[in-house]
Image (cartoon, rainbow, N blue to C red):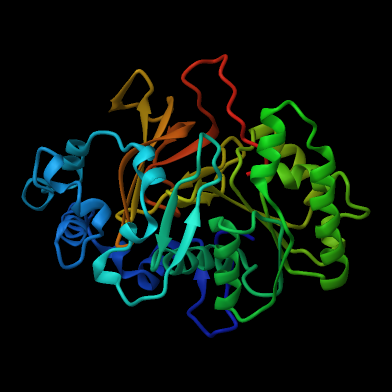
Amino acid sequence: MTTSETATTDGGQAEVTYENLYESMRQRVPALQLDLDAWTVRMMKWHFSEATGAPFWLNQRDKLGFDPLSDIKDYASLSKFGFFDKETLRQANVRDLLPRGLAGHPYRVLETGGTTGAPCRIVNVTRMDIEVKMYSATLEARGVAGGDVVGMVPSGPHAYGHFVARLVDSWCSAAHFIDLDPRWIKELLRHGQATDGYVKHVIAQTEILLQSQRPSILFTTPKLLSAMVEELTQPLAEYGVRAVCTGGTSCSREEVRYIQEEYLEGIHWVDTYGNTLMGHALQANPMTPTDVRSYHLPPPLGVIRVVDPKEPTREVAVGQRGRVCITTLLEDLFIPNLLERDSAIRVGPHPWYPWDGVSDVAPFTENEDDLLTEGVY
């Protein structure tokens, strides 16, 4: 599809093009229309006021050494929080994470994958609905929104499976899921054991659904996609798949090129970069043959910075590699200045998404000899 082609949804929403993609997202999620500094101040009042804040943050207010309600005057002021310690989330009771302003709303407890230690838990009240609206717009622009879905994604407490279910609910189709425990794969890897048997088990479950249900879209991770396309008895397109949506593990430029050229002819590949604490950084397609895929997290709801690993208060220049640092500013989740497990190259704004992003995401370790067990998710 070229940038001038359009798509419509079964629900009768206005057509979405690549040119109006960002504006469409702003209309669906009004918070995207707000200034980052003003939204930051609003979120401080939300998270640190007795009437609306979560006990998790209210209990820390007196220990911070500053008053978020008066001293945080813009986004840059969030540096006063320093770098967020994931251990505080690991130790938190999940009920303390629910903002008082959202009491009485249904919520879902989500867990991280546990790549760098014990999993962290968060609560979802509003964020997933926001992500569904933004992601739906990206699929509509590509002409692939709608239809039944197979989710070859982590199940149980993981955000990915819940997100796919919510997304498919938004267009009233069927979502078929397999059983997938990414932590078991990581446990095998940590003990030097082979994971081939478990991966084949996951692929076998998926192929049964592909054959019997003929979905329009397959959701999975890049590593599982890479393993699966070599095992299937026929090309993905012959199962009726017209789009593959991936997220989670990193994928090199060469891996992207190989999978796309060898196995995904005639299929849209829509990737995201993100995790449970960050949400979805949306993929922007290369605009020229020499460009690379880049990923952009929409402010003011979240901000990605790429910082110097040795001096993480300093942001690197566009085109340089550094460590990913994220800030999440949502009503149901506030995380300031979290140094992520990833490295990436900082890129400038894209015609679709007019804010900085990242490309060439890869695992980050403090020491080159350290092993980060990425697994399949």
